[in-house]
Image 1 (cartoon, one colour):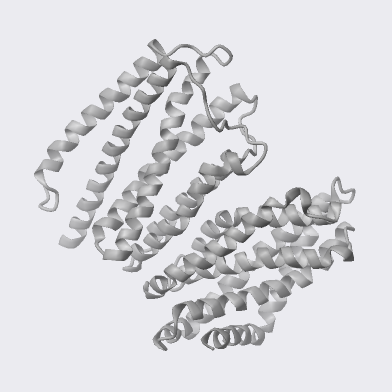
Image 2: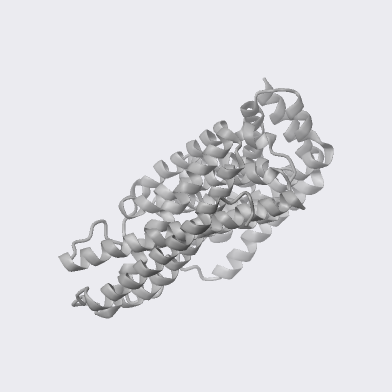
Length: 223
Length: 221
């Protein structure tokens, strides 16, 4: 139950901050627009450019979401309060990961149609497979992002920690998401790049496993 | 000399440095005087006698950081944190040597300074991540420093097997999976590896000694 309570708390905090959500949406859409203008108007390989744009916009905007969740918790002392409840650390981590995943999934639902329209790569037949790719990428993003965000909690260098360490760590996940999305939009199948599914699954499991091992230690680290 | 540094260490480090520098000098002499010149690449191939030992020293250094980080979390003994940080710093120096010597080789062998090849790319990511370790460690001044650094030392280690296995996992790798070498070349390479390993140990203990001195100075002030 702790897991769902933490998820509900984090999502409620996000929902109350409509101005931030609007900024996040506008920021990610601006990224899609800027990159589509940079690649266009005559696209060389629309499927490749659209998939790179989609995931670059999501990953960059995602850091804003993670940082904001951290700030809200730091301001209210929520992180310390959660620790004092004595709840299972992994349940707290799981709740936060789900909340971050939901936020990223909402962002994906917003950015995907824009990228598809701007680059003219829309293909409804591949939508279920694309949702699967997004699930793999966003679970990993939320798992690693929440882990690093917890590590940065209470530290003066949290923005630094997130940007310096999260992006390089997530590169295998990002490349996998781009390759699979490109393959789906270009060929309608992931057959040629199927190996990336395994790499993404390994990254997802690794992020969750490391969190299960280390989250309690991270919680105890204080500034 | 500070009381936290044993006397044998101060004596031993001079011997170690002398051995390391003598072995490095001997390895360079062997590289240029004894190792045969490779037929296709010529003298440029001799970069391999620095590049490969540096890559192995990098992996060893980051592996030691990983092991020492686990030991710190298990025991909470500050010495393990010092070992992890010292090893990571020396590892960064070797990783930088790898990243500089690699393109010098690539220009001659592959006709390009840089290509987005699996091992090059994953190694650059590794370098960025461990660079981040130092930036983050330096930016934390509180008691959380050791714990945060140890968690990072463990989490970042995930990338090492990826670098190691990248030539097998991804298609289009230009790095060879196995190398066949002339007997003389192999001997020189093995000696170079030994020399650079001794150099690694000397640099590591020097950095560890500085860490111990710094901590002693902080405790006194």
